[in-house]
Each structure stands twice: as C-alpha cells, then as structure tokens.
Length: 184
Length: 43
Image (cartoon, rainbow over all chains, first blue to last red; front, side, top):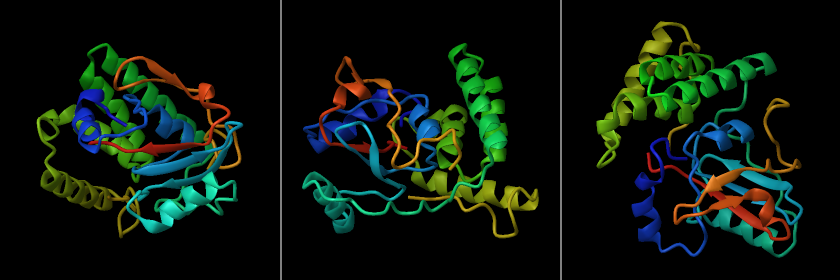
C-alpha cells in the first residue's frame, strides 16, 4: 500500500533483504477488494487461489501466533478461524458502493493532477467510513506530502489523528467516544 | 463484510500489480502454490 508509488517502500525492502517479490498497490485496490481498513495484514491463499485465512491489522512475522498459523497452513493443515478485525465492517452495501465510487473518482481526479478535487472526494469517502485508516492516510499523503517525505513524521500523524477525531466527535460523525480508528 | 468485498473462503480477486524491482505479478499466475500475502505501508 503506497499512495506515492514504490519509492517510499524501497528502503524498507532493501533493508529487510527479502527473498520474495514485493508489489506496489499505489491506488489502494487491495484495500477496496478485500475490505480492510488498516495494515499490516497477512492473507493465506491456497493452491486453487482461495483465501483460507486473513488477519487485517496487526499481522507480524515477529508474533509467534501469526507464524504458527502460517506454518500450519504450509504443512497442509487448517489454518483455523481468521481473527476479527479491530474495526468491524459496519457499512451496508449502498454506503460501501458510495465509498468505493468516491475513492475511484478521487483516484481519477488525482491522475489528472486535480488534487484538491481528489481530496474532496476522499474526504467524503472518509466521512462515510471514518475508521478507514487507509483512506485517512491517503488524504494525509496528498495534503501534507512533506510529512511523509523524505522521512515519516509519526508524531505529526498521532497529533493529526487526535485532532481529526476530536473534530469528528464534535460533529457527531461517530458516537461520543469517536470512531474506532485502528492504529499500529 | 458485504458482497462487494472478498471474504475468507472465496477466490482471491485476480489483480495485476507492478513489482518493485520491475515487471509485474498477476495473482492468478500464483496458482498451484501456497501464498502468503503480506500487506504493509511505509506510512
């Protein structure tokens, strides 16, 4: 998931000396198709192309419980039930369709260098789906590129998220406790 | 999840995504192998 292309990911991949291929999803199509709202994720796919297990948010090869599932799957055993995501999906099909349409329109506008209009569409999508961290970060990257390049300002992100959630609570977007935004 | 997203037990959608080191990968070309998709962002 890289809203600015693969260059931002390259240093991480090189540092990790990976032995597997890395692909770049610049437009968030995997997020839309699989319906996840945060990363890091692990998805196990069998020989027939069927998804057998998925953990959306918090997957790590440093977590023994995640490694165990992968090993079980590789041995040909049932990987077991998939964890429930932090932010369960609460949108109905019509809202979901609207979010998807606005994300697509935003991507199209962005590709035409009409970034302000793109951000407006993404903000409308986020308003419908406020716990979607993938959309939220896409907006941040578009509006505040200096916070992501050359280095990522994590303190800024925490403060930005806090301020946005405060505003959302004031505007009644979610309940009094705010939207359950997953945070890694 | 709604009917529009792909759930566990369903086929992984067939996507073509560019490889970081050049070329591309088509998900359906991975058939016949067990695959772990690890998804992350630098942000």
